[in-house]
Amino acid sequence: MIPGPAGSLQALWRSGGHPQDFVRAAIICHPHPLYGGTMENKVVSRIARYISEAGIEAVRFNFRGVGQSDGTYDEGRGERHDLGAVLQYVRNIQPEARLAAVGFSFGAWIALEVGENHPAIQVLVGVAPPVRMFDFKFVPMLSKPTLIVYAEHDQFTDSATSKTWIESASGALESVLIPDVDHFFGERVDDVGKTVAQFLSRHL
Image (cartoon, rainbow, N blue to C red; front, side, top):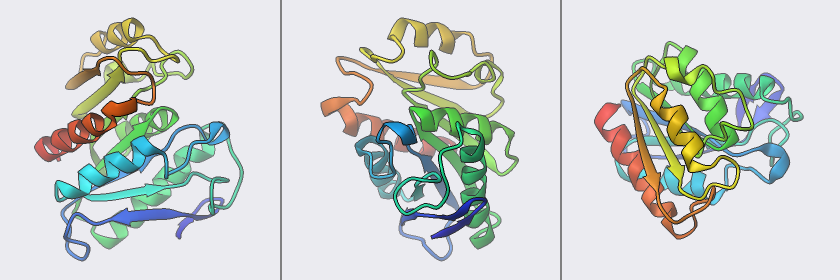
């Protein structure tokens, strides 16, 4: 349990092999709290697995009101503060560690915006960002190394829209299209985890 602005936040820390003296860590945000999103989500947990296997600490947590986390859903406002609290918790353990903010779906919205504006975050990853559902206008101006992973048949934001949005970015943004799958990546979920881990291994 991690102290948060609305009470305690439930979290899982999967070690990359250096729990006491780690130099790299990624904080992973889950999908929408009102539609079944939790840190146990398959995409989130698989990303955490591959990140940790790459030697990077993987910290996932439940936003306020989810699982054993205190509080109630706050339309993204409070959830940004939740991520900030988890980031601070990790920094308190290793102030010099390089950090990444990673998010899937709704979590991508939170991770990309908080991560871009947080001075301790060096790398950003957004997986299946629902750009038709939330305001992602800040993304084309991202200044940090950023990876966007998106699905060919995403039912919430079609891949053509995602591609146009990605191409509008002026910063150091990379993208990977996962073919033949929808928003939840189906049998290609391991490809997502491996892609994210490889990107973080290169940039973090």
